[in-house]
Length: 295
Length: 274
Figure 1: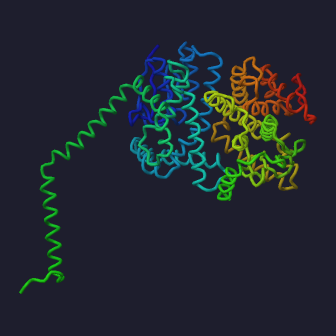
Figure 2 (figure 1 turned 120 degrees about the vertical axis):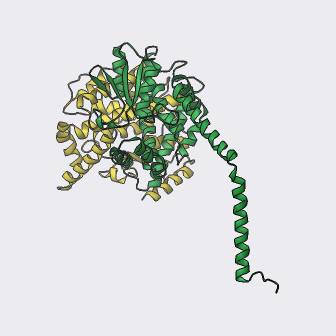
């Protein structure tokens, strides 16, 4: 098979891609040991449906996860051949559960929650997108997410109530998933399948993103088996990105420490600052007559 | 009145510990003239659930049940001072009183049950809404006359139009509005396949006792099978899965026969769509 090319949103925070749909496809391809090349395109304007991921093969451009799975099955590549019918049914049920309960919460946290949107999401996308698209796409995604939340919870007016409801549902869903995963390595035993790719795509960005509103993230961090699940997949299948990021973090930490230790002027500056402030205060005290000079 | 809702749910948690009162009412639209396929499925699922729990309730028919409901969706129950709508909150409310159909299940089975319930509500619920509101022939022949039947002119047109818009908006954010009708039937078929594979040859989804999932599946499948529509492909899709039909018949017999409430029985031939 010719090497496949997958266009995606670029990765960050130790993930191969920050986007749910992209990450899902990448994880699925990695599980099946497909040889493919990741292209960090970062501009969805020129894609067939205006969104990532796009899997390009001979004359075809596939964008939907189901289509990509079907395409792989045509090539006799699937991670789900070992599953029983019952397990395949469960795969379907859990994928719907994720979509129904977790997806709105992610959309909410990414785009509707003002802290995250201003502090993380919009700046991130604006930086990554080329000019002039950086003025268009973040706003569009924000509007889409707002419309989604508003029409799913049309009968609730208060924003805080909506937030409680969305996050509450998602927390319940995370607990359910944590219970279902139990002590297994993957959902159906020791090998990853399609549902693991989906689960990883939903959980990993939520776990790794440096969010400003962290209520749901903390709940996920408390589910230790889901945590381990994500790092297991990151280490096994995305080892390059994982290690690069860890190195980067280490370097940054080291740099920071070095800066503090290496600066020879720092103590001199501190002493000067203290000296200067004392002089100013004494001068002020003398000037206003708080201290009187003996005459 | 969201703040009222919060107080209400708080109240429900506090008063939830009391035993089930005798005067619980379940509000829903009129069955013969007014109710639509998606609402009917939800109402029947809640009724089946309450019957499975052996809880007493009285069905109250109201033309404006939808507007009375705290969530804008039917059915809802009135238990003392509490109004609770939708299947899941009602099961949670009943569960607060120590009554649950899934208490005997292991935690993993409960997780599976939740996943399958989500599958049923998403796939069947969205497909029913799509066919009721987006399929043109069904909308013109069934939905519009029925939804408008309880309102005088010109409200019957106006309210129906507004409701259609909200449903379309909701379906489009869920990614269902731009599916074709064939794709919707294919989704239903896929969902039925999953349910059928999960059910296999057993009587109920989890062992010998019915659970919340059984009530929900029954509500949707029974309603789809017995509701006449201009195009009966939805029902015939389900008829392709004999074990689901059987499951539905068992529950119908157990729950609704002994209460003496005559219901339309499930036709076996796929032609009784008038």
